[in-house]
Amino acid sequence: MSVTLKLKQLSYDYPNGTGLANINLEITAGEFVCFMGPNGSGKSTLFNILSGLKVATSGAYYFQQTQIDASYLKKPQQRQRFHQQIGFVFQNSDVQLFNLTVADEVAFGLRQLPLSPAEITQRVNDCLELTGCSQLRDRVPYHLSGGEKKRVALASVLALNPSVLILDEPLNGLTPAAQQEIRHLLTQLQQAGKTILIASHDYVQIKATAQRFIVFNEAHQIAYDVDQATLAAKPELEAELALL
Amino acid sequence: MSTKLPSWLTTNTPLPTASSRHHFLEQNSHRLEGLLARFSQAAEQAQPALKHYLPPQIKLLTTFGSVLLLSLNQNLLLLWLILLVDLGLLLTLPQFYLRRVLRQTLTTAAMALLLILPSLLLNANVWLFASKTALILLNLNYYRTTTTFSQVIQALQQLHCPNGLIFVVDITLTYLKMLGEFLLGFLQAVTLRTVGQTKHPYRTIGLLFGTLYLKTRDYALALYAAMEARGFIGEYPRVPRTRKPWRDNLYIILDLAIFGLLFLFGR
Image (cartoon, rainbow over all chains, first blue to last red; front, top):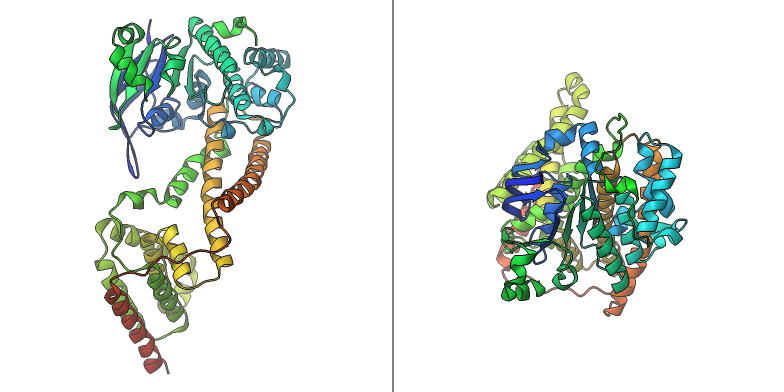
C-alpha cells in the first residue's frame, strides 16, 4: 500500500510553548491508527496540521507525495481539493454544525460541487442512514444532544467521501450502543480503503478496532508507535495505555 | 443504522471540483486567529511574569493621569518630562515587553501620523499634536502590554470601583474571549468544508452569527448559574495590597511632581 501521509521532522510552536516536537511519521493508505497521550500532548495540534488548519513551524508534511505548506494552502483550488480528501470531525462538534437543519448540514459541502440535486439527496440520505441520523434530518443541529451532534458531524464529513478521516475523540458522549455502531462503521470504512486516524483516551474502547497505536508523551513527541500484535504481546504497555 | 456502505463510499475517487475564488470567511480566519491569540495574552503568559512590578491600580491611575495631562497641556517642557518618566519605566522592562511596547507604539503612531498627514503639510504646529498623540499611545501601549485582563479587574477592585462595574467588565472580557474562540472554531469548520463555490457566502455568515447569538445566550445563563452555585452574590473581594510600597510611592511622587509642574508652568 502507498504512503498517504508523511511527516518529516515536523514541529509546531505555540506562542506560549511547544505543540509538537520533531515528529517523524508515515501512515499508509487504508490504515486505522489511534493516537493516544495525556491532555495537551499534541494530538489535536497534529490533527490540525494534518487537516491543513495549521501549518508546521518547521519540518515537512506530505499528503500523497505533495508537500502541504502555507504556499500550497494559499491557492483556493488546491486547498479545496485537499480539504475534500481529508475529513475532520472536531472534538467539539458544537462548532462544526451551523446550518438550519441536519439535512442542510450534511449537504453543505456537496452543494458547492457540480453535482445533480438527485445525487446530493442520495448522498445525504445514505450518510444519515449510515450514522443513524435519518430521524433527525429536519431537526435544528444546535438543539441536538452531544452524541447526536457527533454523529451529524461525522455524516457531514462522510458526504464528501474523503480518503482520510480524522476523528478527534469521536466516541465521547455517545451511548455504548452508539459507540459500538460508530466503531463498526469506521471498521467498514477502513475495509473500503479509507485511512482512519482517531484520537482517544479510552484504550479498552478502541483496542479491537485500531491496527496501530501512536502514543505521545508530555514532551510532545512520539513515545510509542506500535501495532496491535506487538501490544497484545506486551501486557505492561497495554496497562500503561489503559491509564492514559 | 445501515450496515452496508453505499457504492460511492467504497471508492476513493475525488468528486469533481468547481472553480472558485477566495472565500471571505477563509481569508479572515487566519487574521482572527492571530487576534484571538493576542487577546488571550498567550505570548505574555509564556514570558517571565511582571510579578514584582508596579501594581495594576497604580499603573491604571498613572496611565489615566498621564493621558489626561497630555491631552490638556500644551507645554513642551512637560511633554519632555513625561517622555523622560516613560523612558525610565521602559528601561525597567524585560526585553520581550520592551520590544512589544516599542513595536506597537511605532506602528500606531505611524498610523496616526498618516491620518494627520494633510494637516502636517499645511501647518507646522501640528508636530506638537503628533508628539502628544505618540506619547499618549506610548502610555496606553505600556499599560496594555504590561497588564493582563485579570490585573485590570484587580486594579478596579483596589480602587474601590462599584461591584456592578467590575462585574460588567469581568463578564465582558470573559464573553469576548469565549465568543472569539467559538467564532474561530466556526471559521475553521467552514474552511474545512469549503470545497468549491459557495452559492450564498453571506447566508453562511448569517448562520454563523445566528448560532453564535444562541451560544452567547446559553453561555450567559450557564455562567451566571455556575457563579451563583459557587457562592457568588455580586461582590468582589479585594486582594491584599503589595508588600513593597516604596516602588508605588516613588512612582506616585514622580507623577505628582509632574502634575505640580503642570500647575507651575501651565499658567
